[in-house]
Length: 144
Image (tube, rainbow, N blue to C red; front, side, top):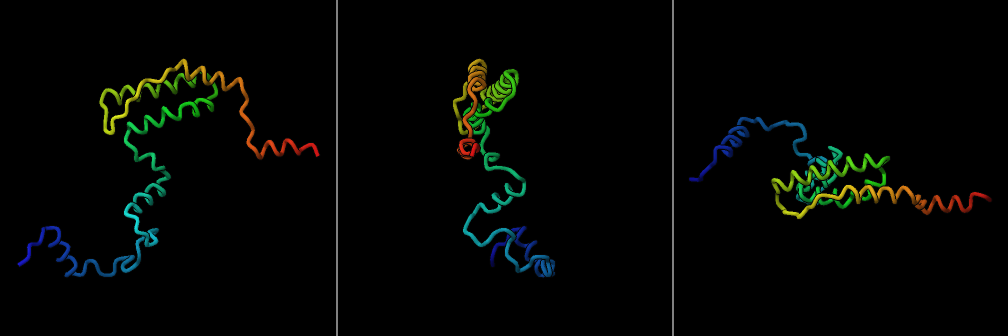
């Protein structure tokens, strides 16, 4: 005599009744799988379908640390010092909320200095960005 769980019993009875016969896709490989031995293929497929990056799956503490790390790059693209200060204030609000109720993994996060970020923005505005190599090549040989 073998033990059968409630779920196993329902599946067995449904199969005996023929409820799984002639289902669409029966006997075909799973779509977009390709037969790789990747246990997380379905997560990757979900991220691709939804247009998300794997960063969306990071814990909030690591996302915040990454946002702090990327802040200097973000600041460069902003149009005004006011936008920089607003972005820093929003990031500091998120950091304060995290510090109020931290989650694992615990990452030490300090508020970002808005004045330092504004100074970085001002310094970047004074020096024009260097043109990419392809543009420099065009410019150099454009007079011919």
